[in-house]
Image 1 (cartoon, helix red, strand yellow):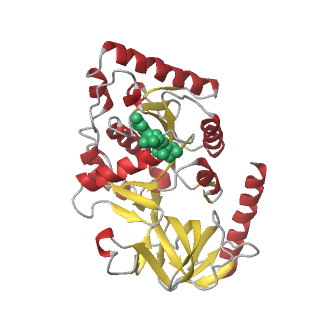
Image 2 (cartoon, rainbow, N blue to C red):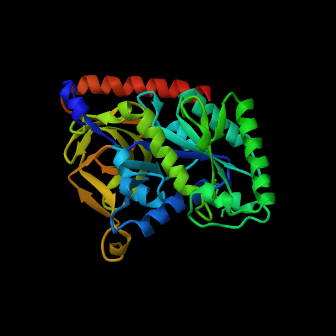
Image 3 (cartoon, protein in one colour):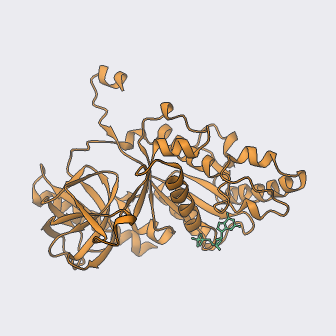
Length: 361
Ligand code: GDP
């Protein structure tokens, strides 16, 4: 902004926060991601939402459209949210960036009928350990007996449309969750009563099925990022790329490729890169940067299209020689201004820390 420019500091550019969805099996993680993706596709103009490799980018204007009037785009300068497509705490805990969590923020999905379950507790422990800011999606509100669904609306309006009985039933379940949060060391409350989202976790009642409360969830995630993550989101977009391997995959015509979430800088075709490997860092050159082709074109063309460069935050498939020993969770670094040796050292240090931490789990 102008203010930043005047005091002489370079604010850099703001990247999209990376969001992970965690929670117990069957509590609705996949449905929630599908809902966000699906609504964004319906709501946005063509091309507004972009499918990345392993992630979905929802830009600010689409979030604003989806949120009813909860998000005014003029109040935000972060470009949107990038959701990691693979939900679950196993993927979350193996996905690191420079020792922290790869995801900047998280949604903990809890079924309002089922409350806290073993994997909810595991997720809570991981979020605590990685100090990842999160909100609780108190999901499946539509299963409360007598619920009168209000598809895709903000939750407070939806609650007003319920019978006293259904509302009080829902409140009992929500307070149960707030109590369980407290048992595990987190102060939490209905998100509309939360002033400071760092000290008090927001609980967002929602239904991934009917979409009610999903506008609120997007608004709260956006607000949380804008308020508390702006500094971390400020990056030098032209700097050397840094990312984390999501998956190592064989692709016809490309050999072994890595699916990467890029969280810093830029990666370009022909860039020299260092990738964490099973035995030692792999030093290679990017042969192709691949993105999913829009669904409509897949029947006639290959599944992927090549791009010249990718800027963080983004999900990208990298084809390069020698990737057979690459590992999920390992760091990827572009070698540019720092010499190759120092980048290899950084990758080794990060891998060593990663191994210590996964051994502890
Ligand atoms: P995951 O294992 O956490 O990814 O859970 P899924 O998204 O696969 O959901 C598990 C089951 O719960 C599926 O049958 C979903 O259709 C159902 N489900 C998910 N969210 C909701 C919801 O908000 N309301 C209702 N009624 N069912 C839901």
